[in-house]
Image (cartoon, rainbow, N blue to C red; front, side):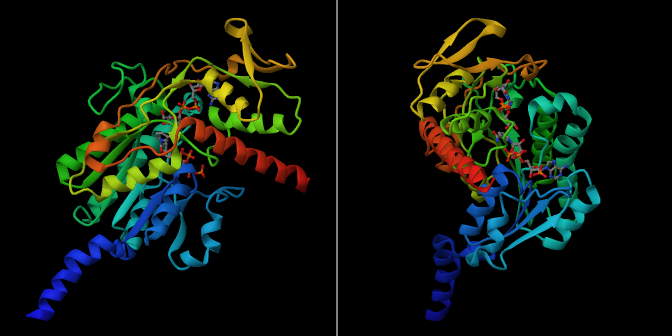
Length: 372
Ligand code: NAP
Ligand code: GDD
């Protein structure tokens, strides 16, 4: 009797609250080589998960963000990488069949909004139908009750915003092939939850950045430039729409929200955001402040420039090549639901984020110039 009681106490109370149960969990991440993939892998490995990541075949190295997990002694035999592509439905099915994960995170996407206007077909194949390939694999393998699925939805779906701030109930108005494709994935995820009872969640994440952010996204483009400037470069930075406003958070904070969604007993969709919005122009100012440079702006439209207030040297100019055929001018998220239901809130302010990114890019630039 006493032994039985101890057994129940151990299995149903001690294991769940100690987090020890995570040792037995296996996660499969599509998009493992991207910014969020790298942070999520680290987060899950730290929690004791076995993590399987999917990488695409590439003619050059594409695992730079995650190589360090292979070498880490604590993660030995708990981190695996497989070739795969979301557009290859059979490969997706075979991966899920082989790995039998308890959690699947779909972070894979052609994630650049501007590029999606040049590659609308490829973007739709990956960002829309790719998600369907995962959901159909779960269904065909009869894994409906064994696996939880996370879909990387996006604030881009709000596009031409219909409400300020944007919540889970705000109507969508996508403004690019990327956003339209993501909207398909958002709804198909909801549909598979309702139609087949699969535990599927979509995180409607607002922009999130980090030192691992791709270099063609505006924040990282700016912080890399500022780092080079700090080390003596004479270049000018060319940007597109300076007046767009974004709700920028830190990617490391945001991957925790993805995981929290899958730990809840009810599958649902959540906005993840900071609740603050800032223009591209103000981001430029903040980044330069980090290296002690005060910026002032002059001119209008295509002639608008940023100058260094002590040297009057031009730092930023406009290049219309970076404009988009249809732009998303304003995003501001309200993450109250995630806060109330999941206990999630952002930990890092924009000022801290800018500091982390600029300092990291200075270190990186120093290493590059030392080795060349
Ligand atoms: P990212 O750095 O661009 O990473 C995207 C990942 O998807 C990369 O690993 C990429 O592989 C992979 N990928 C691209 N096409 C693929 C395909 N056909 N099959 C398999 N993998 C493919 O993006 P992120 O910033 O980490 O964002 C993660 C996800 O969240 C994306 O779905 C993005 O759309 C979404 N999202 C991002 C934000 C944000 O602000 N960062 C906000 C909302 C939603 P390669 O490394 O080989 O290119
Ligand atoms: N990339 C880029 N490059 N954007 C610029 C530039 C430039 O030189 N100059 C101005 N911008 C403006 C864009 O027009 C846009 O309004 C804003 O800066 C942010 O652009 P990105 O950093 O490319 O991000 P995004 O908001 O379009 O998309 C990112 O966030 C989405 C979430 O809302 C991506 O990560 C998407 O995958 C993600 O879904």
